[in-house]
Length: 291
Image 1 (cartoon, one colour):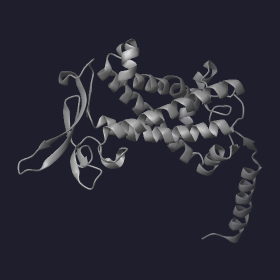
Image 2 (cartoon, one colour):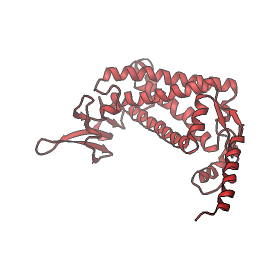
Image 3 (cartoon, helix red, strand yellow):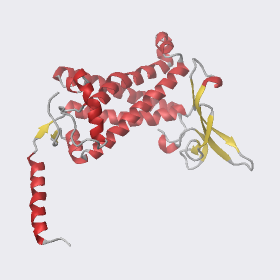
Image 4 (cartoon, one colour):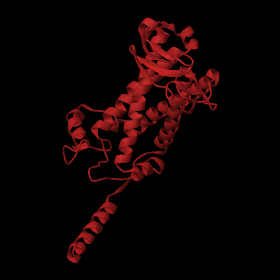
């Protein structure tokens, strides 16, 4: 049973915590350029994945070879007939077969039925099988993704904002303490500025490693680029190997995207969304403003 005296003390405490939240400074965190390129890049990434899966459906396998070679097959989505006339979808990873009917291999054809198809229609762009249309979507938004990245880096260098995002040597000892804080193994995070050390590590890898490699490996897949810059394709081990690398780098981007969404959700959706829409951010208890 709750006594009135306990309620009398609990209410002022709650009000004090609320007022403490409101007193935390509201800072201008993201410029218009950052916000626009962020949302355009997010849109481009979604379209690139969906149209990329549409393109992948035309050759639903990945080979660790300079050319198509079943003996060096890493991943394959296929369908096989069963006794009685039924069909099942199969995903083969490093020679190990998994039944994935209705999800991968034999799935939604984008037109109300099912067929032999690696990825379902609801996950590709367009939904129905159309390689030429998928390529148009993919190439157009690949340029948007690339231009957004270039603009972000150039403006970040000119405004000196990029230095706050890059992992520094002084951040290395703080990586595990920051992870321990996320895992609830310690009550407070290590001191940091606008971005914590784990954010800096993730953004540094994405901006300067994985995103450029996705673009470059994608260029290596283009027959036109292969014709005028053959050494680029050769550097990736050939066009089939370039497909494999392109797929792996895409998975790295999607992994970052998933973690990013999880952290946005867990650290305050309203505050984080406001910062990426209006640019303003209310500092938390442990947030800093500088490098």
